[in-house]
Length: 368
Ligand SMILES: Nc1ncnc2c1ncn2[C@@H]1O[C@H](COP(=O)(O)OP(=O)(O)OP(=O)(O)O)[C@@H](O)[C@H]1O
Image 1 (cartoon, helix red, strand yellow):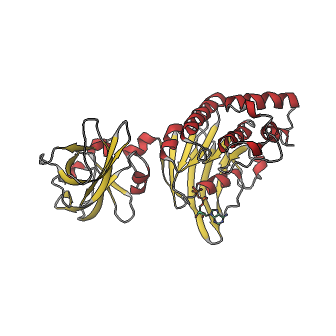
Image 2 (tube, rainbow, N blue to C red):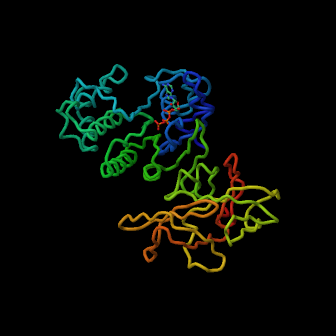
Image 3 (cartoon, rainbow, N blue to C red):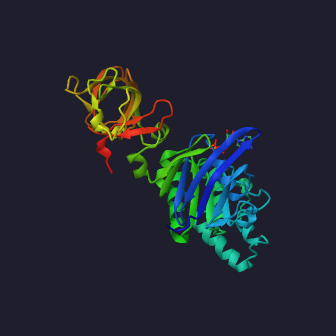
């Protein structure tokens, strides 16, 4: 196993008694783009700031390229961080903003080398026509590009990007994501990219880590996470739409869902316990088929909402045990308020603990 570029071990951090990081363990491999995906307040920024050395930790270790840098100043870490709020220097023009880091005592590059690198980076981010402008006169999207250029020009061992694209409109965001991947390919750099946007995360990342309440719940490729979501929270955060959940109970060797005609024998699950009691049945919407009402082994539902997106439509279906959203095949059309029926593919369901949300077992459909 090669040494990870960034290794975080047991990071703990409280702000004025409020716990932001509760033991973050994370490995980012050399030359990968790793997305840290989590809701607001999950601890994404704190994890990045701790990696850069910009906050003092209560506990834990930060290793960069195998070296313990926990007590090393930010300037000695060879990482670069882009914040959501741009952090540009307002009194300088775009060129000097980008060149700033290269002129710092830590780098002290000759001016002709600086000029080459600034221009090359500005071309890459399509801001070369803005180099003479004062940053105050730029739009939000242009400022964000300059902030990214400022970080990239240094070519550090590792980039830390904190929601770097959230201020941009959709088209610009998609374009910049592609550019970041391109830069990544060219420079063989390692990136840790924090975001709350699932689509953004899967579009850019080689691997994803799901963070909530200051802990990493799961890390892996999107395929690995899909195949085995470690916790119901993970299922709710990923997928498009996200995982469907139904309140269920284990009774006499099978999983029963209130109102469902379908039964799920325990033998369908890689399940070694035999306890009766409540569980949460989770299913990816792709494994739910809308069927004719009255079809055998189908389950009744009601169309709560129809979302017509032009090129496709999605429905929200309500049942007595829970609701789900699903993108429909072209030929299917439903009206709000009407009844419907659906069935769940054999072996496709997962069982979760309703209290902790932890995965108990998954169906044989996703066997390794
Ligand atoms: N300087 C601070 N002082 C007090 N509390 C803070 C400070 N910075 C962060 N927190 C709190 O710590 C928790 C984690 O914050 P953090 O910014 O790391 O989360 P995040 O996942 O980046 O959120 P967001 O997506 O909203 O930026 C939150 O509850 C936040 O309110």
